[in-house]
Amino acid sequence: MNAQKLTQKSLEAVQAAQALATEYQNMQIEEQHLACALLSQQNGLIAQLLRKMNVDTDAMLAQLTRSVEKLPKVSGPGRPMDKIYVSSDVDRVLNEAERQAEHMKDEYVSVEHLMLSLIENPNSDLKEIFRVFGVDKNKFMEALATVRGSARVTSDNPEETYDALKNTAPTWWNRLGTTNWTQLSAGMRRSAM
Image (cartoon, rainbow, N blue to C red):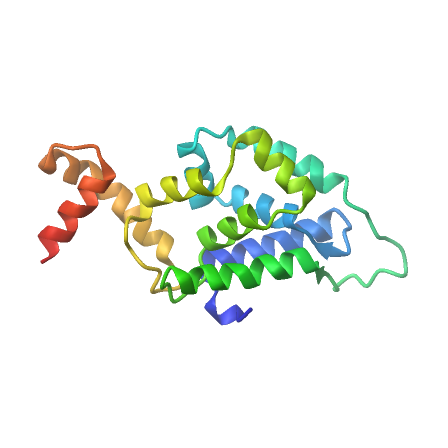
């Protein structure tokens, strides 16, 4: 994975996952660390998308944290303080997220690519958490389409664009007389022509 292709929020999530692994004295970053980091981002896109899917994000975060607490801990003189490794599962998730971005014709790997890759490649613990909370690819893609529409990730800070879209949506809704994001995005595309 080319780290230069990560958006600011994706890089923050990977760094937060590393910090979480350090905090819990884990030797490597696991999928649960990355999922916790994505869900914990302040005003984060992933939490917003999961709420659109009617997921209780607080309960899901609590379950993810319990899963992190159960991971093997390494302490003592044999553990280098500044060394945290990436598990093979997370390495696969990061590489698949990059492929997802390319497939979606995006220039950067954003948080939605990371989450989509986690959904498609969960380890056994994460798979069970997703099952319990009803998180699957189809629901996630539907929620993503309501926020992102057909927009592409062409900067390292696309979430600001999504937020801007969200903040202007009521004005557009009023003008278009609709609360349907598909109609809204189509109206925006027509007005841009």
